[in-house]
Each structure stands twice: as C-alpha cells, then as structure tokens.
Amino acid sequence: MTNSQRLNYAIDLRKKGFFEESRNILLSLLASDSGQGTLYLNIAWSYDNQGLEKEALEYYTKSLNETLSEDEYFEAKFGLACTHRCLGNLHDAEQIFEILIKDYPSKTEIVPFFALCLMSLDKMDRACELLFELLIQHPPTQAISSYRRALLEYYSPR
Image (tube, rainbow, N blue to C red):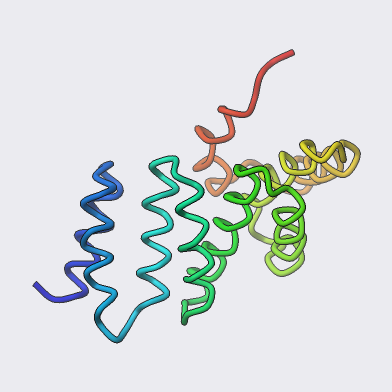
C-alpha cells in the first residue's frame, strides 16, 4: 500500500470513528519525508473528533508550521481557533478568529463559532452584530449546515 493510500485509509478510519487506529497509521507515516503538515492536520482532526481538544491543539499548531495547501491552512487555523475556544483560551481564540474573518470573508462557517467565543467573553454586541450580518448578507449555506450538530450542542432555548 502506498503512503497516499495509507493516508486515505487513515482518513476513512477517522470518519468512521476509529480514531486511535487512524492516528496510529498517521503517526507511522510521519517517518516519511513528505506531507508532514497534512499528517499533523489529520492527527489533530482525529483527536478533535474524539473530543480530545487538548491533544488536538498540539497537532493543529504543528501543522501550521509545515507546508499545507490553502484549504488545509484554513482548516488548521479554524480548528486551532475552535480548539482554543473549547479549552477556554478565549483571548487566543478571539485573536485567531479576527484574523480568519479578515482573511477569509467568504468562509461563513467561522461566524457562529466566533460569535460563541465573543459571547463567552461577554462581548454580546459584537457577537450579535456578526450573527445578524451573517443572516442578512448570506442565505443559509452548506458550510454552516455542516456544523449544525456541533452548534446545536451550544444552543439552549431560553
């Protein structure tokens, strides 16, 4: 099996919930000379998907210090911001979200998570501003819908 096939197999395992098995393959692939950033990012996702944010943080950071595609760079930066927010590192998360909003204005999936961060920092006016701007300027998108389950965990009707 080629390294590319092993990577794809590890990604498939992660998507099916076999996080440790996925990580074992990804970690074994780190010995190769190429794709370190992609491997670190996939390890981060594996930890993150398993709810092990503290472990994911290290690998998001490592991935950002390696070569990544433009999409992977966004995903790593977004994952890092969300992970900081989950771990309560709200000021770190806020700084990264600010950069993401500026650098990726079309990535509407950033907004709800940034708003959650701002709400935790008692910055309700800015959070509401972002959310209303999203609703007014953007119809519902697949990008936001793909995070529906995660966002529902934070929503509680009053």
